[in-house]
Image 1: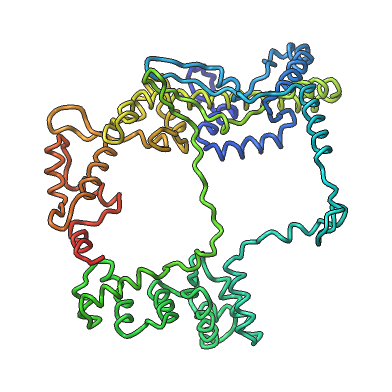
Image 2: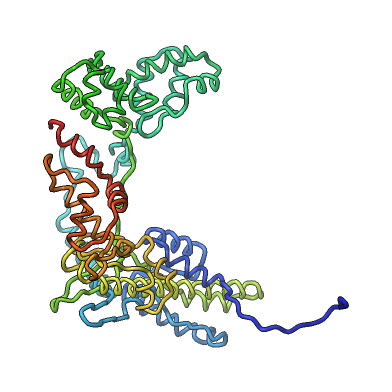
Amino acid sequence: MALTPRLDLRQSQSLVMTPQLQQAIKLLQLSNIELTAYVAEELEKNPLLDVDDGSESSDAQSKAESNGADAEQSQSGEDTSEITAADQAMSQDQASGETETALDADRDSLYTDEARADVQSSQAAEFESSSTDWSSVKGGGKGFDSDLSGLESTLSQEVTLRDHLIEQLHVSIKDPAQKVIGIHLIDMLDDAGYLVDAIDVIAERLGASIAYVQETLEILQKFEPAGLFCRDLSECLALQLIDRDRFDPAMKALIENLDLLAKRELSKLEKICEVDREDISDMIQEIRELDPKPGLAFSSVVAQTVIPDVFVKKTADGGWRVELNSDTLPRVLLNQRYYAEITKLAQSKDDKSYMTDCYNDANWLIKSLDQRAKTILKVSTEIVRQQDAFMIHGVQHLRPLNLKTVAEAISMHESTVSRVTTNKYMSTHRGVFELKYFFTSAIASSHGGDAHSAEAVRDKIKKLIEIEDISTILSDDKIVDILKGQGIDIARRTVAKYREAMHIPSSVQRRRLKKEPA
């Protein structure tokens, strides 16, 4: 067969991920914090995007701007109507059976320009009638005409661990070379107060002898709070006991065998420390009073509060109303008037093309935000419908649920449901839960009935262990027998896996903990 060039015509199908589609998919899996940051970045890049403050005056202005831009945009066939992500999502009412879904509209009372001006003038008059001539007040103050630029200096500033240690360093060490080593050692501390590098590595880095660095380290280990500049947990506890003058030979032996203490092997510890059970209990109590991470006392890390994306509220007829948290929805709009003005003034083809791209990007972003809100609401509504028994009775009645079930019920793809439930939270009367919490695997029933949710089974295991006492410590095999009696077909290794995931010790360790005196 001769090899010759030829032309073939073939028909095939392929999925092309346009940038707009990629953006819409990306927005689905963003949390509310990440979405806010993303929209803020788009506001900086796109001059046609504005923040919607929700006022009536801006709505009227937007309508006027839209009318002015209709003529320009009618040629390109683009949709020039104003769209806001929150407003479109709030216009959707999905009520079915016991589950009623609706988005909260902005119910804040809004002033018109004239009414706002009247309020401001009345407030100004009231302030003038009740104002005080502060210059005539006796005291050490200087009045409002004086320099108030130093007010910020009166605010309390948080002291960091490094600042706290540097202050002690300047008082305790006078030798300049040792100060340099001390500052470097301070910089080598992690948040918990532990040294992250070995002494020989630090000595080689600074060009100093190991003995000189060790001498400096011993000075720093006497700084407050006690326990800093340690290499491991044993040294951290030892430094604190030395500071309390409680590091005797028995305590030293206990610190050197913390692994036995973790296993609650008290009999071995009694022999090693050469003390009786009462003394070992007192020594353990002293160790419990110590701080294994003394550096965290100066930590400035603030825990981030979980902001729910969806609220679930009970209705008067016994159903559930699912509402999006409007505070987490970015409210952006398209500045039609600015687009119309710039388009008229643009002379070059590049300028017009740039403004058209900005318009299309802004319009697509707004529509993507709207679609994201609707999708979250749709998925959340189906989750509430599927888990109605959980809402009424609690975790014991949590149903097994997977992505496919929800996807088929709302006519969406599983991957879309997976993205929607990522980093999204639902607020219910039972607490705030991640949407993925409601998706659990199924455990078969031993009596041939409905399957049980894995989360419900974990809760049963936890409650069984909570009510046990020293005489009724339940082994994993015993827990299996109890659960099978309740109609749950579960293997012993599954019970062990669930117990370990909940950080519950084994039956042997729990028995030792029960025997240990309080």
